[in-house]
Image (tube, rainbow, N blue to C red; front, side):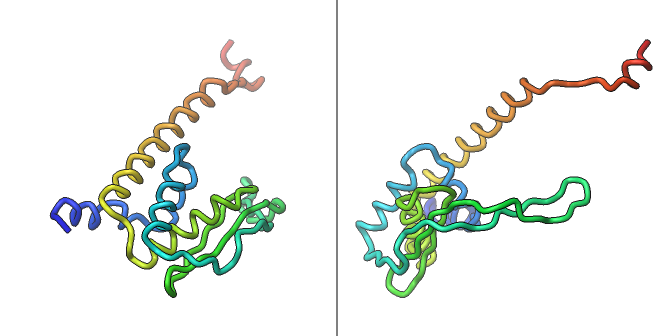
Length: 160
């Protein structure tokens, strides 16, 4: 491992917690997750532990006034569990996408085993994260532009 690769691994995506890494892989609009899974399958023996299938989970919300948690209802998910050697990997996504759940599980197993990432994959994940943040900011700006501002009757009367 050269110095640049070592620096990237010590301070980059490898230190990225699982939740953040998964968010990047799920929200990426390109083919990053599929290509990363393809890399894993080419280099390691991925065994399916629990076949990719659909299920339901309860979606939790928080009452905005009293800050009390409550269950909003069921949400459809796709989930899968795989292993590489004896190291497990899990993938779950919202909706009907069993293929994506499998891809996530395979990447998760490889990451848990410690055989990922390489400098190439680290830079791809970081680039994807930058693009996701840019896209979220753009969406937020578009939503803000369409907001309607209302004046209450009291505010209207006070301004006269």
